Length: 232
Image (cartoon, rainbow, N blue to C red; front, side, top):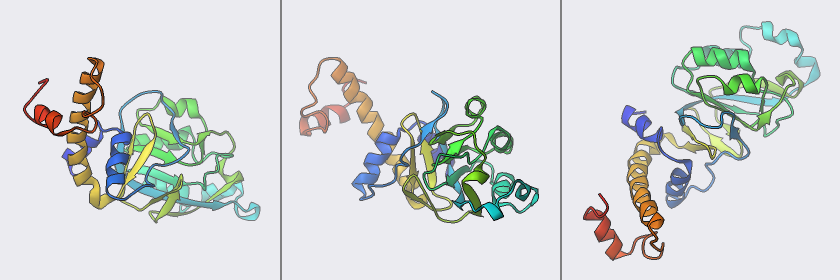
């Protein structure tokens, strides 16, 4: 991802991005059922590094599995490239955690750009205080082994009902997380910058008492006024 693209997306809203995706025929890119643990903060932005889970089976998921250096959960934490977002498929099951404060802290120290899971996170209060945005379906204390078996990393997954391919760009704000197809990221970033510039202009006019009719979306007259620098 280009640095300029990252910079723009770090200030873009998921609302604007989902509208731009809709205009391109993509209706299902917003991860459903997840929220940001921290009440405010910078956007989450980064390429997706994925971790897939299947339902846990008791004979395969004793606590001793974490001693295996190739355990997919631990391997994901130790191999995710800096600047990437760990996106986890937990089948929308938040009855157990998909990570806790120790793993989240390790991810932060390694330069991870954030966490997105449609499962739970334990130690949620501690994770919310980290210098790294994290999104989940809710706090959940039980270990992942009670419900989830980490099975594979860096493969296509579903997260919150959205198809996520390795390298797709995850963008998160206060509303939630949207997944941008990697090949569209630069184009979307360019368009969202202009879109949000116009929407800031509209908001200023509306605060001043203007009607949205002919302004949002603009008719020809208002488009000309905007392009001529009205309000600059």
